[in-house]
Amino acid sequence: MMILRILTITIALLGLMIAQVSALETTARSALVIDYNTGTVLFSKNADVPMPPASMSKLMTLNMIFEALDAGRLTLEDTFRVSNKASQKGGSKMFVREGARVRIEDLIRGVIVQSGNDACIVLAEGLAGTEDAFAKRMTQRARELGMENSNFVNSTGWPDPGHEMSAEDLVFLAGRLIEKFPQYYTYFAEKTFTWESIVQDNRNPLLTLGIGADGLKTGYTAEAGYGLVGSAVSGGRRIIFMVGGLDSALTRSSEAERVARQAFYEFEMKTLFQAGTPVDRVNVWLGAEKSVEIALANDIELLLPLENLDKITAYYTYNDPVEAPISTGQKLGELIITIPNRDPMHFPLTAVTSVEAGGFLERISATAYILLRRIRAATSGG
Image 1 (cartoon, one colour):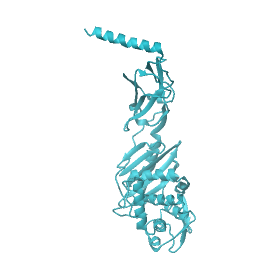
Image 2 (tube, one colour):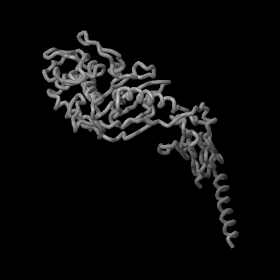
Image 3 (spheres, one colour):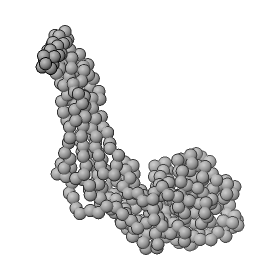
Image 4 (cartoon, one colour):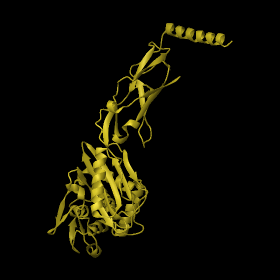
């Protein structure tokens, strides 16, 4: 027989101090906020819609360079020559001179801190021969990584109808850079970079606000609006987020800061259940013991929305009785937790101890019990 038990999870049980909170929201045209440690989506708005990414697409250019460095095809001390095309490119610039040879590390910092379009083109031409060839490689690599809503026409994010990315792809890419290339990710936190006596500040406005921000990239074109892909760490939690399509640099800064702060303030990690603590006892059929305790195999630690704590539900199910023999750790049921706006989560309930199969007397007793129930059923049916 299937047994179902409802558990009441109350705010008092969770031990959380609840302040008045509001749901994450933004005026951005598209946005995505995720908790890096758990992969939990905290907020999503048009996240899978391709859009002009402007300079935020430079993250893909950097990914290609970091992969080449990681594979040993490049070193930070290698140099690339600056072409006329690179030196004459408009927009944000590192101000490299035509004909000069520039170290890869300096070009990387020129892309990250100064958002240098010229530095991007030098890297693209140095790695692939031409910027067009490099952009094709970017698109191919994006497909291999599962970035289905990205297409690249250039290395810079310069406006082009075919050049687009989604918030989903940008956040995925940011997470990849953090996870796969920690030795290079530190460049994103640099507040200034000087090239040939020209000092430029990092365009990321969050780096100086004391919210734990340590990357990644801003972007702006008339068509794309103002956007930012960011990451921040607070209290052991890292979040990655993107806001795009905003109407001014000031709005971009304030919206990005607000989204980051809310992502930390409105969600909290909490251990709901501990491994090994029995939640119920299951009857055992034909066993040396008449019952066995069941418990969770692992602690359940979840990122919880403080706004909807009263809407979290939990229940568990198991078959009763269960036939012996039973091994310690054998799955006998499952715990299901539901949190608003998320799919139900399933966790196995396992036997705390083993139960051997019963001997001759236990089996005789069980057989007699079955016969007695059948006789009673037959006589009571008229």
